[in-house]
Length: 290
Image (tube, rainbow, N blue to C red; front, side, top):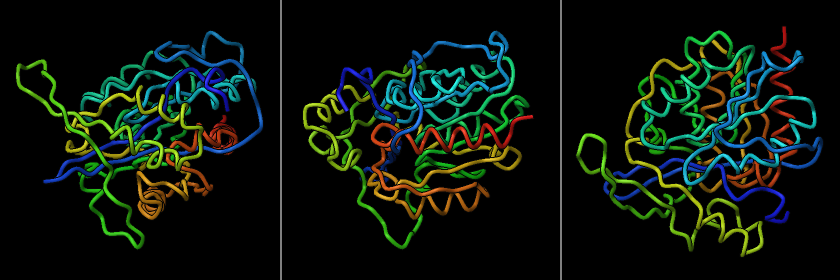
């Protein structure tokens, strides 16, 4: 897949520091529809389009941006869906969920809300109380329960654990005048952890260079009442994920009662294998259409 076909970017992960640093990551799959990519941050109103299809909102994770969804956006728009991919601030679970929640309130009509990696935690909180959100779709994503943080989930014992992500901490000024810590994936390890070395080195290196850092607050703040308790959910497990353990993904999917599929693919599966990801989103849209 050539870089010119996708707009630079990625769909990401989430991280945590506990003495040392723990973290998170993405997923996708092949074939089916094609079309025109949506631009990150552009609000599209389902009510302005004469279509029975819901608006699909794609929320990226950490060490990424919304353009990582491009192969999926192309396929969904070809199939007639209105698609929008807002920027995820990556500053903290609470403010990030509030940002996406407000964004969703400005969309008219039914919504299928999709989250990748850390974006899954964000949509879990953001969709609460919004009757327009008809389905939640988790792509190699966190699906926390009330009281969970990314850190606590990453520390859960699973049958086949994975190594902690190789993150590099830096500081940034917070609005209240204090100093925060944010994490970046070691660029030398990015291709291995997020892409299973599936892309040409030049393209993988571009992903690493363009990654957006994740605030440690995003990994330590706890989730509220999860939207998946009242909204039907679908989940894709990335079987080759090296950022979130596939066993942890299976645990969260089962706990949420999600309709679950598994595909071979890395954490950034929606970029490397967009077809199965697109089909799962379409399945959720069809199942919840009224």
